Amino acid sequence: MREVEITLNPEDASVPKQIRKRACQDAGISPNAITDIRILKRSVDARRKPIVVRMVVSIAVNEPLPPVIQLFSWRNVAKAPSVVVVGAGPAGLFASLRLLELGYKPIILERGKSVSDRKRDIAILNRNQGLNPDSNFCFGEGGAGTFSDGKLYTRSKKRGDVRRVLEILHLHGADESILYDSHPHIGTDKLPAIITAIRETLLLHGAEFHFGSTVTDLVVQNGQAKGVQTEHGEEYTGVGVILATGHSATDVYRFLDRRQVVMQLKGFAMGVRIEHPQHLIDQIQYHSREGRGKYLPASEYSLVKNVVGRGVYSFCMCPGGIIVPSATTDFGIVVNGMSNSLRNSPFANSGLVVEIRPEDLSGYSEHGAFAGLAFQEELEKTARRYGGPGQIAPAQRLTDFVEGKSSVSLPDHSYHPGLVCSPMQEWLPEIMRFRLQEALRFFGRRMKGFMTREAIMAGVESRTSSPIRILRDPEKGYSPDLPGLFPAGEGAGYAGGIVSSAIDGEFAANSVRNFLSA
Image 1: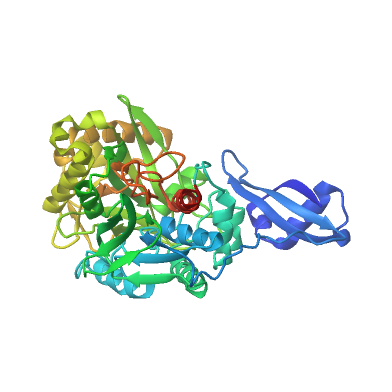
Image 2: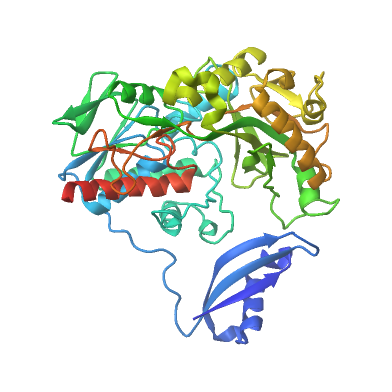
């Protein structure tokens, strides 16, 4: 077996026969001698012309390549000790899969609905016909990632194996390309079936699922967390509680506060979502008037600028995607982005957010650890006041915002509930407004054509991460105030995205095992 680095033009990179031919040439091996070939890494290099696709491939001569993925030893845990898992997002689901391996029975409680039932509520929301506060783009089986893109790129390497997470997703139906693409992506159209398959694996091995179960308190016995209570009066108990409720379940922070579980204000980011015609971004990134052509993917970008000591950066960039309504109550407007697997929308959108540090929130000091949450909720309510009925969001042409003037019209866009012109430079907080304006000027100089009247910004992008961290022992994984409680994922303040949340969920499951064996 050998690994070979090869470079191909985009058309040849789409043809398996050409990949094989080039790999043989570069390895100095006859094509007839190869018994197996597999892509290990793939990325598009558009830094200069001609644009090329770089690959690392593994080739085998006179023997097969090893299996694509490892085997997972999930046990039947129907009669094993139970662990209560609150939340069926990536942290909760991957914690539950790991619990199977460790010999514990996950009892999974999810305030929202199953994927299939959740689809109906999201369709209603997209038509601006009503928002279900427990079943929307944030709440429900699979968590916020299920219906908002499925990007799997992460820089997180701590406490876990990214490859392991990708293999589990592939085993449950994700395309093999997520194992080798530099920026792996599943797509909102594919994720629901994958999440359903993960649930079926868990049920097959003895786990329990309870949808429509909003947790309102903990069950504490002898100074340890042993279970939870729900709004309907049910009580579920076990040997510990993994709390993986996501960054939008703010009611969880309230009952933890009543239980005197220590939380702290942490840095986060808020801003807007910007949208361009995808063809324009392709022209800029591929340095071509023709755009991407037939064989290149919809292009993306990553932008960052430090403005007066705070980072301003693009976040959750969705090439060939759409903007979606991500509020969890009717009191606020929140926007996010998503793409289907083909990334074939005529629009490209991205969050553009400003770093918010605890010292920026002195005006909210009376809220203590909840200062960031209060700031976040206030901005979402402001966006509500400047929006239209329902989930119609406030928006502005990008050039008008930078120039400090109101827009009188908006170009075509992807946001289904609808947009209304709003002078966002007048109501965005000053610590965000001038930084966004300065960063956009810089990005316009860096990407010629980026600043255009055909681009819009919509508000607000406020749920990038949790403004609160639930304290836990960094090694043992449980709350120092309440042993047996294992905060995990984005809502606990320890992750940011599908993969890092999944890794943190596995860390929580391992911590349960270590806690019980100590």
